[in-house]
Image (tube, rainbow, N blue to C red; front, side, top):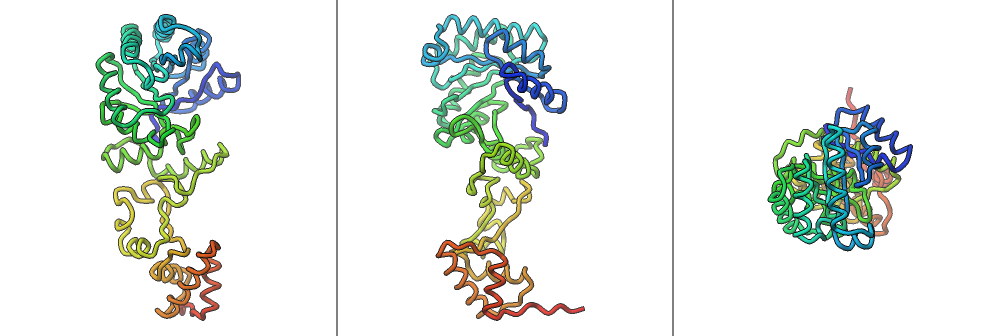
Length: 343
């Protein structure tokens, strides 16, 4: 699809994960990234997996330094610098993340960013590890970080408050060159910025050519849904079952006339490899019923359309599902004739 970087995993985590990262690195043209803590064994495992980019991370907020790492700011700074140095010695590009950056004091954040930048980093990632950033704050933080490094800036956002994609886009607006996303938004707790949301917002709202083959986004989403066994909500933006579905009579009538009336216009189902659907239920109107009957080969009169629509609404109000088969059964019960096929 043209995805620029694939962060394939944490090579030191297990033999299976090491092999997976190595196999991915050998099997794609995309840049493959491997994660590593500021621990020698982690870095060696990432390098041995032949990744194209090593992502070194360490906690920098006081709460994580003290109660997760059980160490000191000085020790964190030293280990960060030494780890970046080791990756540089191996001749592999390096990304550095001050984990929990959005809960890190600005003075210490600047200190550690400057220290690793002096050692030499290609990317500086800003992780909103606990999802507490807002779009305005993320923009300010990107600008702040840019004052303390010459590295390209990347953002990593979490969705605890439903702001992950918005924060990623805000990061771009403030000058970040990259954001870390996941298909269907899968990630720790409430998840990460969703691949499909960020890509399509950039393409459709910001008029950016991302280089991504967006027509495969729905296909990709379905693959990840199946392999992860994490269901995608029907109302999920871009890839949810309802993303391009219309039930309301007003909406359906407008869409039949011109899809731009009740869809974004700048994003069509075809752009993401999806299909537009007219859903039948308690809010369905005559336009939608007529369209579906005609598609099924019927030639209803205005009165028959009204009869069928009333029965569809009644059944929908009882929370019963109206399938095409059920619609055709209603049509037969009402006495709607099929169109004559002329040879």
